[in-house]
Length: 411
Image 1 (spheres, rainbow, N blue to C red):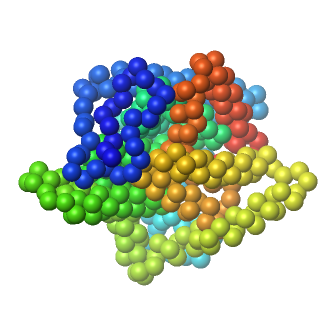
Image 2 (image 1 turned 180 degrees about the horizontal axis):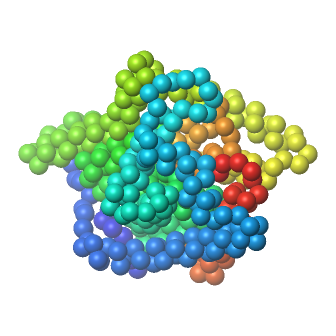
Image 3 (image 1 turned 30 degrees about the vertical axis):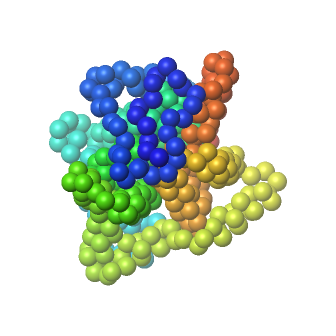
């Protein structure tokens, strides 16, 4: 069955679309809004997102001030922020080397390129540009997340989905000079483009996501596989001329989607003079896939310690909750591209034997996992939804502050 048109804003509790892929002979009806009207439609979601993130940022700033820590440095120049700023300044290394966790070719290029471009347009510290990129992209991500939720479950669910995404335990990263906000914005709008049959847009956004983070391969695969399955279903029917044009756009989207990730991996190989150059770099960062053996060992070790570190327990709880939410998403029969993306992302994150502590951050783009919660809250009474959101925002603020001030390591 096709995805339906954008739901009526007066109904918020019931999904408007059946699961599966886009119907080959009847593309979804699209009612494009003017930018101002579309922004007005999404404004409750953006305001809710801004409220929870401003609360978290305020708590963090007061906490950091009380501990005499530099808020600016922590948000704009610490840890991975520094890697991206240095790449924007001096570019990438030409050699592989042997030092562990030291080769900057592990970091994908789109964020540093935006920092460099922004520095040309807006003179000032590059850290400010990197932080500005992250904050702006966080609102674009919240808008795209709302658009997906609104289309599938109604406006109220879309608002709640954006607010829940802004209230995740490590959501403070969304307003740091990291790539999570940029990657989530590209992911959300790429998935929305798939749901609305805009295949070339979907492929282009997926390609850009592939230039942003290694996990962009999950989005590229989701877009390409959904497009190819749609083409296969189209091929079983007689197609008029319009159907052939739609098929061509679908095919182009499928071909474009993996180009960003593949081009960077190929470029690293050429730069280092070996076909497996990118994977050799990742090996130096211990980012290799072992099918989840390393993850299970880490969880076992954490649970066997009498007093495990709070941040690592939060990461563990996030991973377990994400796996449970994926099962719920499958049970809810979410659309195929969303299940493919979240399933592949979980497979990559849980199956890696690399460092454990950033994995909650790696799952920030997996916003479709929150759809079952958003849909349930949309059906609940208003005071229940408000109570849950307030509790989530307070918890997020507490963990965000602990992440940068109590946990002595990268988020």
